[in-house]
Length: 241
Figure 1: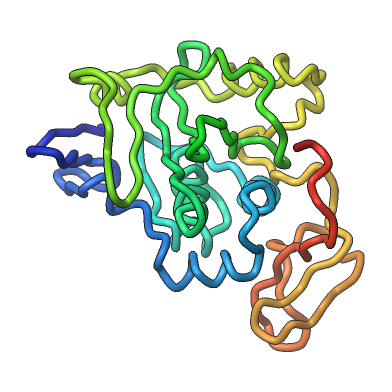
Figure 2 (figure 1 turned 60 degrees about the vertical axis):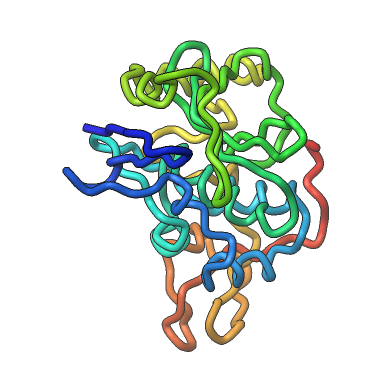
């Protein structure tokens, strides 16, 4: 079970293994080699970075509470709302004052990213898009690698005690987006996060490009060198920002 305690201005959380404590700021890692590699590949554009995370990291429902470090999310290409928010914040900290936010969405436990100017970036969508209902996001706790802010006493503990129902949460998000429940435009637990199959995959090791693979890039390996395949970044901006 997740827990937390405060020591002066630092907050420590047990969100991986029992009796293992981490400073919450240590989860944000903008300078890690894996984050830097991805940042340089995608580019210094907040919406492109959000779109990459949305399209390339599959949703994984936690059994209990287990937070991943950015490298783990990049390598596994899966994670829940905390994991994808931590990854996106780590990327954005190379260009903005972004924070990971822990709080509630319509009363259910959730995590998202504050771009640094108050803009909510939702990493559980299948593509980058403007959040249509920002008033339904209630922040409790914000953090990055430099600072952590609890908005009222015991707010962090309240987040961990909050109920989670991912199916209900995604259904509410789908309704807010105006999508039918059969194709809500957001991730369903265990599903790939792509709206459609990729047009091309590219090998991160040798650069080999595979056109029209007929499946998701993370499901195949490079036929030339056996390397990991990524969805090829399109040379156009996301239309929904």
